[in-house]
Length: 568
Image 1: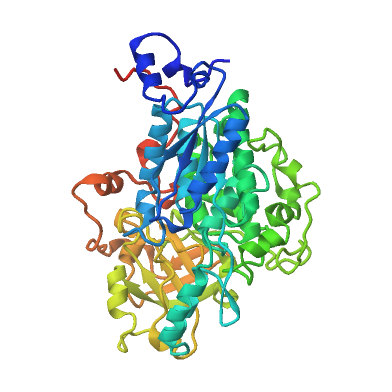
Image 2: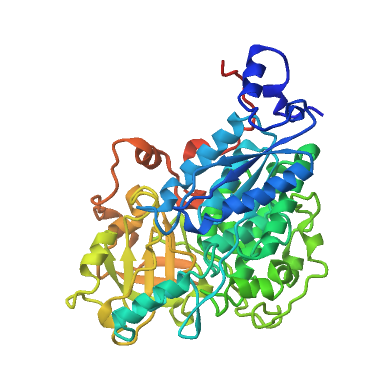
C-alpha cells in the first residue's frame, strides 16, 4: 500500500530529493522506499510541565515498538502546557496547543501519530488536534504519580493543597507544618494522583477508545507503563496499515461511554468542556444535556479523592478502570470500538475488583447518582454544571444572600475583611472569569471561604461563577455559567444581597427577583479582558462559550490531512 509519507519521499524530482536528503541523519534507505509507515510521536515533554517531564523516556519505548512493527518513529515536540506554572491559566492556550499540533501533523510527512500527554490540558489538546487532522492516532497517557505521605497520612496532590491551606487560614494548622508538607506531596514522576483533570482525561481517552485498553491509570514510575508504551508504538503501525482513524473510533456512542465513565470515577467537571470541544472537532453531536441524561443515574464507584478517600495508585492496584467499568457494563455502548478495532466492552471480560474499599460494587456505591448535574435558570440560561459527588449534600438545595465579587483581585482584596457582610448561609458569586472575561476561564471557581467563617468551623458554602475549578478541588461549587458575565450573561446583573436559589435535584439555578427587574439592570462591564494583540486578542474574539467546549469558532469541524502544495 502507498502511505501518505510517500507523497513527500517517493519520486526522483528535486522536491522528493530535498525531503529525503535532509532526513538522512541515521535513517536507512528503506525508510524512504515505501512499506514503512512514518509515525510521529507528538511529545509534550517539558521541564516546565513537571507532570510530563518523564515523557521522553516514554517516547523511547514508543519508538522501540514502532521500529519493531516495521515503522519509522519520529519525535515531534509539540506545545506543552504545565497546569501548575502557566499564567494566567493553561486553558487560555489549550486551543493554541491543539491548533499548532493539528497543523504540524498535517504539514509533515507522517502516516500516523502516538499522542503523549499527561498534564490537564495536554491530552485534551492532543485529542482535539487528532480529531481535526484525522490521521491514525492513539493516546499514551503519562500516568499518575505515586502517593506521598505527610505525618503518616497519604497526600492527594491538589486536593490536600486546598484542604491544608484552608486549615492554615482557619488557624488549625501552622504555616510551618503546611510548608513542610510541600516536599512530601510530589513523591515521583507523573501527574496528580487524585481523580483530578489529568487522571480524568486519561480515563476519558480510554473510554473514548483512544488508548490501548488497560492503559489509563498506570502509575508513571511503574515499569508496565513503558511496556504499554512499546505496545502502543506497535499498534500505531497497525492503525496506519488498517486505515483506522479517530473519526471511526470516537463516535457518539464513544462519547456517551465517556460520560458514563466520568460519573462512575467521580471525574473532573473540566472533562465536560474538553469532551464538548473534542466532539465539536469531529462533528459529533454532543451537548450539555447529554451529560445529564446519560450520567445522572450512574453510581459513583471509585472511592478516590476529591470525592472519596483513596488515590490513583490505589485504583490501579484494586483492578483499574476496566474492573470499575465492568460494574456498569450494561450502561456502555457495546458497538463503540477502540483503536484496536475491537469494542471497548470486550476488554472488560475477566476484569476483577481486588479491593472493594477502592472500587465499590454497584450494589454498594459511594453515591447512587454521581454524574455531573447541568443546571438552568435565570442565572444560567445556557447551563451551568456542578459535581454533586464533591459537594455537601445539605447544600445541594439552598437559598442564600449573594455576596458578589467582580474579579479574582476583588476576592483577594475583600474576602478576609472583618467588614465583609457574609455568613455561612451566603452564596459567594464570582464573575468576569469566563473564557472571554479573564481570558481563558481559569480554575478559580472554588473560591476560598472567608477567614471569619473558617474560624467558626465552616468548611463549605455555595459558590457560583463563570470560571472552572481544578479537578482536584471539592465543595458545593457551581461552574461554567453560560453565558458568562463578559458575554452579557445574567451574572453581570447580580447584586450583593440578591437571593440566590440552588436546587440541584430540580436542576435549577436562579436569582429570586423578577426577570424584568434583572433585565433592566445595567450589567457590570468593567474588569474584563481587552487584549489588543496576539493570541489573547484572537482568543477573545473567537472563543465560544463553555457549553460548546470553549473552542475557537473557526476550529469547529475537521479539516482532514490533505496538503495540496509543495514547499519548494
